[in-house]
Length: 255
Ligand code: CO8
Image (cartoon, rainbow, N blue to C red; front, side, top):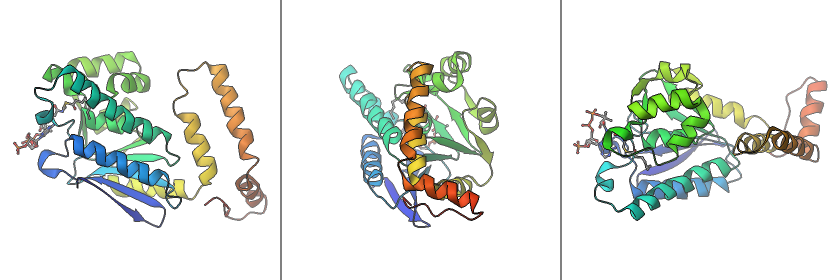
């Protein structure tokens, strides 16, 4: 078993990648186990937010290079598609996923983090897509997700050079939203904040923030109005709005 998950504060799932002897490099078994864990968490009504991190102060040093040597083009296509499936699953599940990035977060490891909703980096983190140095490319969504996140100047620079950058630079480039010296703790604190909000509103917001960028602004605004209006059919909005007027903490029925 390379992936385990435990629940803290009843509502926060901490998913741990643990293949320390290989710097948590993602092999086929680990990708399969991540798929199974996220499938399982997605239908667990108790779980309101998820933190993904790596054991031994390393997020993941990429795809397993040993497993990639000598594979055929069609096998490489399957690897890329499996990683896409995992990333689409992370985007589709109702709970926000926070990547807590310590140490190396390279290649497929960074590509996985890029699929998460929020990325927090430890001051010791080192991030990059060094695939070009191996004669390959970031085939786990990296070229497109980094491009979407940072624009083409930064994405081209990082992917074409294969440079590895420290957390502080990743923050400047908006690849991570915060840098801290207690990464897992801080990510769990963010998960706690999310879990205290309406589960229903959080799921709606996640749907809006994910996967809509290929549509026109007008259709995205239309979707926003649609999701916004649906929340008014739900008792969470009545409770949230009333609690503010009554100067008390809301008790969301969906939580
Ligand atoms: N794959 C397999 N094994 C690895 C990997 C890896 N990506 N990274 C580290 N390891 C292993 C090493 O082989 C070593 O094993 P052993 O002790 O048996 O020799 C062990 O982990 C410890 O590593 P090092 O001794 O090298 O430790 P250092 O602290 O000296 O260096 C580094 C750490 C800098 C992380 C170094 O190991 C390194 O450069 N690793 C490779 C980084 C890399 O190139 N990543 C990109 C891989 S390709 C990729 O991700 C393609 C993605 C596209 C498809 C998406 C699929 C998910």
